[in-house]
Length: 152
Image (cartoon, rainbow, N blue to C red; front, side, top):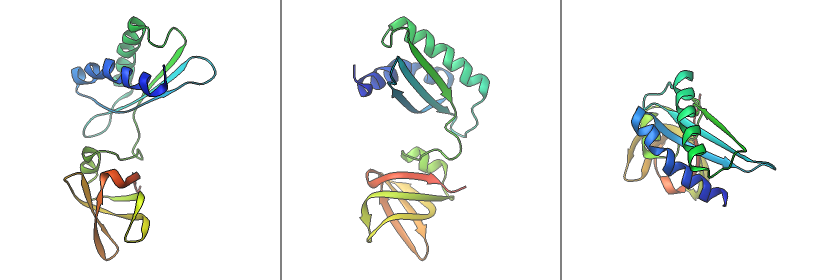
């Protein structure tokens, strides 16, 4: 199986775990080093602050599912953690969470001849982020954002 297929299959299998405990699956990354698989799961609460005990409990449930389904075989590593305060922002929900804060944006296509902006998020609507930068307000489409991180 290719990494993307494996990631999508795992995401579908473990989604109910997160729904059951009311924790958000922020991101899932699958890597195939020389031997076995490595799966990294990033989870958080809507208001932030997932605990180590919650990560451990989720880890146990995911291991049970992966072992039962056998899609990775017996040779894999699983890590469940918080994405951290400097996590990449991707979805409308992510941007709403940091409303009023400073964010640095790297764009796929230039907006007003620039590929990089930093500014305060003022609104999130219709798959766009409204950002107040030095002297102007910009509307950045989510599909044009290559990377966005909160400035700490």
